[in-house]
Length: 131
Image 1 (tube, rainbow, N blue to C red):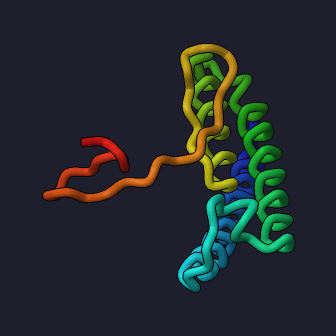
Image 2: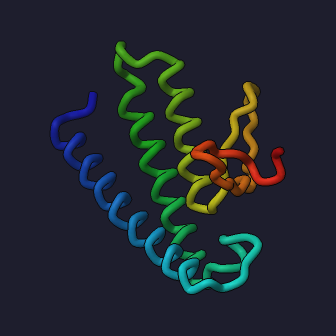
């Protein structure tokens, strides 16, 4: 059973991760704003140090996700579908740190895809190349 102190610790860890993630994405945005040519943000644009920060962030996200699932495991109000949601949302977050888009195919495996770029045409968002 998770105590009030345990909940406070999880809340503090989540807050720290949120702060670190904000800094990581701000640094990546600054690099992108400099107008450097790149094909893939993760491998072409980010510095090795910033990629290392991203991997550390991913490791912390994985750890807290496991801890949250463990804390919720004993609750009679948490169904297996809730754990599936936690897994998919964790994968979505981990993919976004690498500037990828998570897609759940309905099977047990997942795919990380490079996001498609969009153009705005008369207020409607369309994938590039779509007519």
